[in-house]
Length: 140
Image (cartoon, rainbow, N blue to C red; front, top):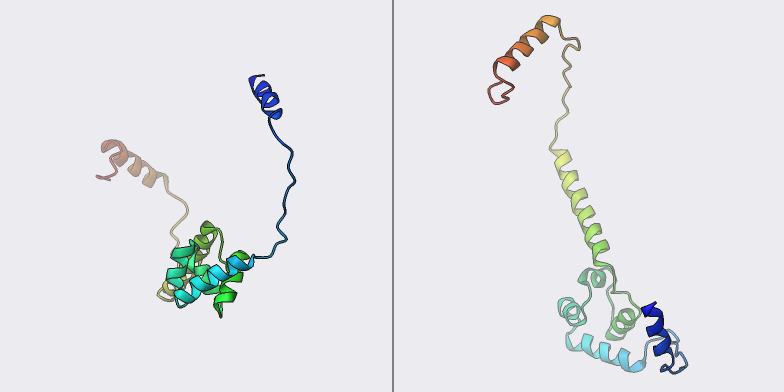
């Protein structure tokens, strides 16, 4: 009830405006700014990632050939990604590599199978030992 009253009161103060939409292209000033940033850093990925706040792995996967290309890719979102997805992909790759090398070190062995039936006498002996040591697994 209180929220509804607050909204109705604020509604009278608001003004109607026209929504401006971006045509989707990067502004020439922005392209020039990031092109200069790229050229000033001499294309140093580490420096660019730190300055612009994006994941360096995305830049390495889709490297630009020039400052202008860097600016356009950056402004179109090529270097912006979900860090958790990137981290998960990196982890998957590390696990694949680790498992592949560990697999080469394994030897094939034959599994030994013991008797499946336990005699009543063996069961009685095990039960007696368990009771005698009060179930203490360290002693057993």
